[in-house]
Every structure is written in structure tokens, then in C-alpha cells.
Amino acid sequence: MSEFSLALNEDQVTLQKWIHEFAVDVIRPNAEEWDEREEFPWPIVTQAAEIGLYGWEFMAEVMMNDPTGISTVMAIEEIFWGDAGIGMALMGSGLAAAGIAASGTPEQLMEWVPQCYGTAEDVQVGAFCASEPDAGSDVNGYRTSARYDQAADEWVLNGTKAWITNGGIANIHVVVAVVDPELGSKGHASFVIPPGTPGLSMGQKYKKHGIRASHTAEVVLDDVRVPGHCLLGGKDKLDERLARVREGKSGNAQAAMQTFEATRPAVGAQALGIARAATEYATEYAKERHAFGKPIIMNQGIAFMLADMATEVEATRALIWRAAWLGKQRAFRNAEGSMAKLKAGRVATWTTERAMQVLGGYGYTREYPVERWHRDAKIHDIFEGTEQIQQLVISRAISGLRIE
Ligand SMILES: Cc1cc2nc3c(=O)[nH]c(=O)nc-3n(C[C@H](O)[C@H](O)[C@H](O)COP(=O)(O)OP(=O)(O)OC[C@H]3O[C@@H](n4cnc5c(N)ncnc54)[C@H](O)[C@@H]3O)c2cc1C
Image 1 (tube, rainbow, N blue to C red):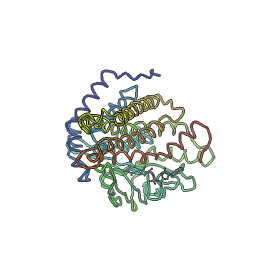
Image 2 (cartoon, protein in one colour):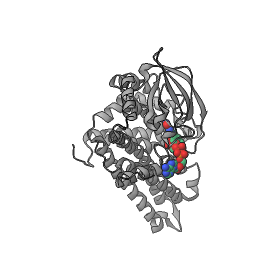
Image 3 (spheres, rainbow, N blue to C red):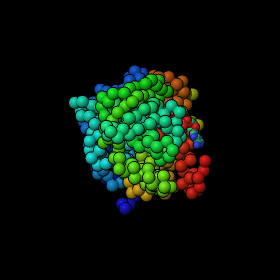
Image 4 (spheres, rainbow, N blue to C red):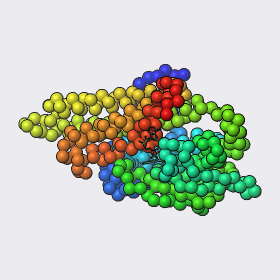
């Protein structure tokens, strides 16, 4: 196990600088336009792909060649410092890739993950489809079904998925479906729906409060037929797992916990990028803006608010980096991944609201970015496990009790 350290190595410093430059030169100047358009920013994602910042090779390089786990969260913070809507457009395919990595065989990973990204000449995106209109937090409530047609060696999927990032515009959709309704969430399996498969369509596209450059839509599955090899992990492994569950042996809950916890620091890093952007912006503004004959920062009422914001940002980063490191060592004990995500969502929502306060009337207008950052921040209390679901996970981990 490597030692936990907050010191970045040379590669990490170079990576951070490179991404920050892209955030300054490309992401931030385009943020307002794509927020207003509420459309997926294909030209920006293409630009990122052209310099190697969007693509499966980039994801693999950053994640695999880093024993500390910190490179990924550091990269995400920089991207989301630029803009969260464009940031989600760049990161959304990672959800699909993570879904494939979580259950797929090495061959399935090699086949499908590159197709979630495409190439710089032909940029593609992936979508991870789990949530449903009647079941978000409560995964036991999923209704989308997958039935095996043995004669054809095909799976037939039916149902509707809700709030799906890149839903309907993705090249690859990874779908979580119920294969045995008697077993609740233990009767689920994940499937890859290859490009152009008949029966998969986009339902309504949501008009959102924030991260409006990120595409979010329903995905409708109407007798979608996929070949047997699209079941992630394969049929033998699924049959074995279901048999174990039916016998009352519930499988490796500890391994599942480590997997879920490992993705949460990354979502926290998204929120952290927004919080840092708002804190920096508000600080600079407070030095420039005069009231009663002096810069407003010369009032403790403003300066202390900024001090608290900066402190929360630093504390959140320390929590996220440690959680990312624990995730890499698969050494979570008290749901530290959930703690990092919970804290970061709250800090982003709070700091962006305070930033609007520092900017006064200007902060409330679209002329300045802080109102957009406030809208963008809130999603981090909601998706990838709500605030309350993180609290549930943490309280169970620290107590060893099945808190309801
Ligand atoms: C912009 C956006 C993008 C998204 N992208 C994706 C995606 O790519 N893929 C995907 O699968 N999903 C995605 N989601 C869905 C997201 O993960 C869900 O919205 C989230 O999990 C919450 O589910 P819900 O909306 O059904 O809320 P509910 O589960 O209905 O929760 C409503 C409220 O009840 C609380 N609550 C629920 N259960 C409990 C409990 N046991 N104890 C205490 N409080 C509880 C919740 O915390 C929340 O405050 C996205 C959502 C949004 C808005």
C-alpha cells in the first residue's frame, strides 16, 4: 500500500497545468453560450478529443497509471472549475465506461469502452441507464426487464429509464435491468446496447435548472433485442450469482461497497471545482467592488465570509483526495467516499450561494457566472446518490447497523 500524501508528483503537476489551460482557454469562454443553448456542446468535446483530453485512452492513462488515485479527482476539479455543464458533457461517458468496468469481462471492456468515446474524427458518447421514473434512490423498484430468449441466444429488454445523462444521443447505452424480479436489487444485470439497435429511443429531453450543456433524457426500451454476449460478465457468471443469492448466500457485499464508494470522490471533485471557481471569483470581485468609500472586502462581514468559503474548499479537497487514495487501495472503512461526495455537494451549493451574496445584485444576473454556478452546484446534492442516501450509507458504515 502506498503512503497517503498530499504532494503531487511531476506528472500530476503537468497534468493539472495542461487541463487548467484548456479550462481557461476553451471551457470557460464557452460556458455561458452552451448553458443558454441547453444543447450538448459537440464542438467543445471534439476540441477536447483533438488534444487528447476526451477519449478512453485519456481515462485509462489517468486512472490506471496512478497509484495514488489523486490524478482523476484533480483532473475533474480543473474541468469543472472551467464549467460544470461542459464538464458533465466531457465526463458523462465515464459513467457508461465505469458501468462496463464494474461487471464486464476484460474482452467486453476492450470492445465496448472505446465505443463510448469514439475518436477525435468521430466523437461519440456513452450513457449509463439505471434510474427509472418511479425508482431513483430505491433500486429495488426498477421495472425494466431483460428476458433471455434461449433459442436465439438473445436478451429482450423492455422499460423506461429516466434522467439519463447522454440518454438517446449515446453510441453505447449500458442498461441495468431486472432478470429475476423475486430477488430485488440482487436480481439485476447490466447490458450493453450496441449502436443502432432497433427499439431503443429517446423519450423526453429534460429542461433543467443547471448543468444545462449536459444532455439529460429518458431512454425508452421497446422489445430491444441484443445478442447474448451483450450481457456484462456473461451468462454463466450471472447464473452462478443468481443461484448463490437464491440459496441465501448474498455474494460479496464488501466488494460491491468498495466499487460504489470508489466512484464517489470523483463526483465530489466535480462539486469542488464549482466551489473553488465561485470562491475565487467572489474574492476578486470583493477586492474591486467599492461601497461606502472602500473595497467591500475591507468589511469583516464580507472578508470572513470569503475566509469560510476558502476554508470549506480546502477541507473538501483534503477529504476528496484521501477518499480517492483509499479507493485506489480498496481500503474504505467508514464510507469515506460517501463522506467526500456528501461534503462536496453541500459545500458547492453553499459557497455558490454565498458568492451570489458577495456580488449583490450583479450576482443574481446572468451577466456574471455565479448564478450559473449556483444552478450547476445543486445537482451534486441529488445525482449519484442524494444527500440522504450518502447519510444512510455513512450511518450504516459507522454504526454497523441497518439504519432505515
Ligand atoms: C441531471 C441529472 C442527471 C442524471 N444522470 C443519471 C444517469 O446518467 N444515469 C442514471 O441512472 N441516473 C441519473 N440520474 C438520476 C439520479 O441518480 C436520481 O435522480 C437520484 O438517484 C435520485 O433519485 P430520484 O430522483 O428518484 O429521487 P427519490 O429517490 O424519489 O428521492 C426523493 C427524495 O427522497 C429522499 N429519500 C429517498 N429515499 C430515502 C431514504 N431511504 N431515507 C431518506 N431520504 C430518502 C431523497 O434523498 C430525496 O431527497 C440523473 C439525475 C439528474 C437530475
